[in-house]
Image 1 (cartoon, rainbow, N blue to C red):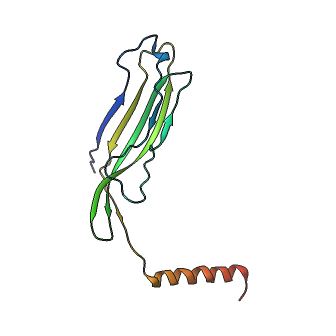
Image 2 (image 1 turned 30 degrees about the horizontal axis):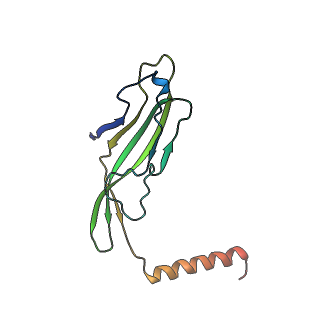
Image 3 (image 1 turned 45 degrees about the vertical axis):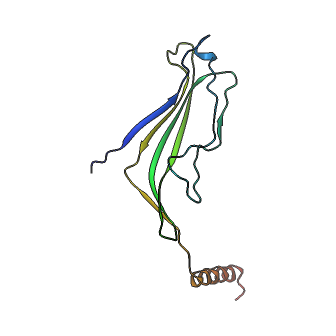
Length: 144
């Protein structure tokens, strides 16, 4: 099976460097990063991320895997959005490096779509689980 993926990137780097690349501070805070509208219960892994450099410089690389997602509400309304996972690397600058310090976000789009459905369980389901918990408790304590 041949599957095509879409890969792209965006990055932040200084326009000019004065005093050498090791003196450039690429500290950053990611307050909110999402690839579409938010749905109940979503956790975006980079929200609230702070990377502060005190005495060094380097390159941050965030490899992001974006998965298209459909969130289906109880009302049958469908919210098309995306969720993602991330792997982060930091490479400190060395004296002989010819690259500039920067923050890279490299991402690819998954060819598979995930569907999340809201659903309500019945009262009978609740009673069945309650009986299972009570039965397990009696079996473990040996009070039968």
